[in-house]
Image 1: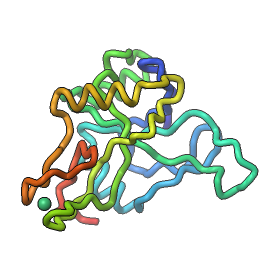
Image 2: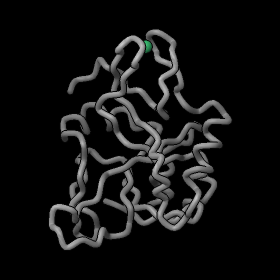
Image 3: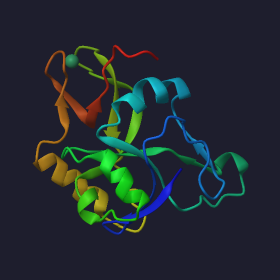
Image 4: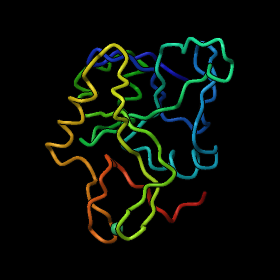
Amino acid sequence: MFIKVIAESAEYWYSPKVDELPHMTPDGIKISHNFTSQTWRGILVPNMSDFRAVVSPYPIVSSTPALQVRPLQFLHWDDNLDLELLDKKVIGTLANDGDFINSIKVEFHPTVQCRHCNWEGIGLVVDTGDSYIGAYGLGREKLNRRYERGGLIETCPVCGEALGIGIVKIFPNNVNT
Ligand SMILES: [Zn+2]
């Protein structure tokens, strides 16, 4: 179930926490993911206290069937917002800009790696493509704000060296995949 949300001028299809991996947008376009439904159920859903799945609400115009897909993306919050409550507000069309101000669009990375010690983890990484439909420049603004308040994981959890990419979340690695 996706619900259209406009927040900070950006448009999303927002998915409240659901057990089944979404495969289709409300307008019938296939959703692509770089992970399996086991990963969805075993890693993503149990750790959804600070992120939710979203899809861009605009169709990709292409005559090539293979390109008529949209990626499943995520919004991550670092302000302890109660996302169970946000789900209810979105469903009731009561969500507002303030609910989304500390969210940032991220992608699931099956492998994030430290080039100093070769530590590997599973993480959510900031989408630097500024893909906020309807809100040009919002991505840069959000990334700057997140950086300024120390909301990025900047160092390797094992060796402490700089990781160099915009990681916002590392999943516990003792989960069942
Ligand atoms: Zn390291």
